[in-house]
Length: 286
Length: 168
Image (cartoon, rainbow over all chains, first blue to last red; front, side):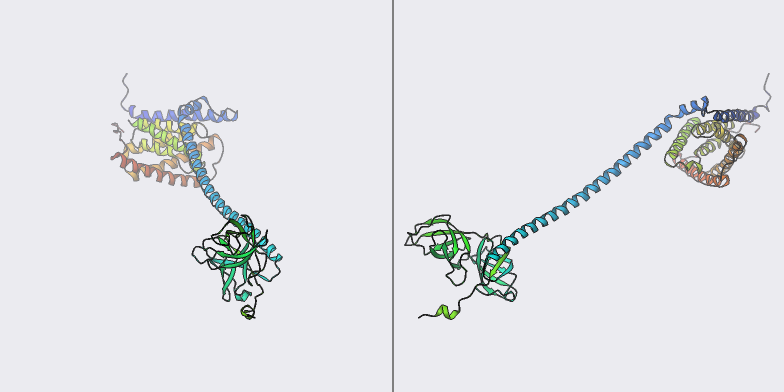
């Protein structure tokens, strides 16, 4: 039996109605099973299983992206933290250096102060602000001058020994001739034998002891002190040690003395306000 | 070919659904990708195909949401049928027409759900009107954007029209 022509176009409508009916039944069943604790019908589970790869894939991609993103953030944080720690280390290193410097300063100043207390003459502490030991004329500029009581011919020492003497002053600065200068001369004596002589700078960082007879007892290692006979330096200031004592070409020995002061590393000094011999007394001849 | 496109669209909609669920849990209250898919398919004017598209898309949406199973299938089938019916008569084409169909479909979809929830669960949907307005706007805008992109990408009208049978 042939289907009448007007039924064909109505089929979608019928199908629509049937589908809606079935869906309504499905909804009713679903809403009922919810109340008895069975939250998913078998049909629902089938649909879920069928399409489950999609949410799983999305979840995996999302989690991976999230992990990557957080990994990147963690890395950035670590990099920033690393930079910060580097800065912190640099800062602490600088602080450490400063503290070590301060500790060194403190030690030096303590020893200098202790040494200054042993001296009977009035003293002034000063800092070397310029040091010229490279040329032939060895000199040093101090940061204090006549305003602080520093005068020409004042002796300059540090905890290690004699440095030189003041040769010029301004109000707030003083120029010092170092012991190693070619024109510097000091009356000295050997601590062990009390033999006296004249010490002159050799202009290259050491000094030579003159006027010591060739028969005198001098040996390397002997300590050399100021003799206090030149009217400038007080007696007993350490100068250095004999490093070489040869028989000279004439009647005197050839003696080389190594100063106990490291002239390349002078920072703080003590200026001794020594008692000057009046010029008239020096020039008086009976 | 149309079914393949639909299947791909369904997978994309489900992907969007999963993504939004994962990252913006409330986003699906303002936006429904399944309606866009169903309207896109139904605008071809094939009534039977539209019914099955509505059922398939709705069941997938139901399976991955906590509503009554079949609720969205029912609502989307109604939308699909309505859109297909209108298009079998008027042959609407273009982004604006697609947007207009989306507006109608979202409103019908929401109304059907509202009625069914009232009947089956005897519950009221909170802030139904506001939710419907927002969902209509966002779904329509997003749908039109997708339609425009498809037009640019395919370089032709993305909807393949079904020849209207004689007697309709």
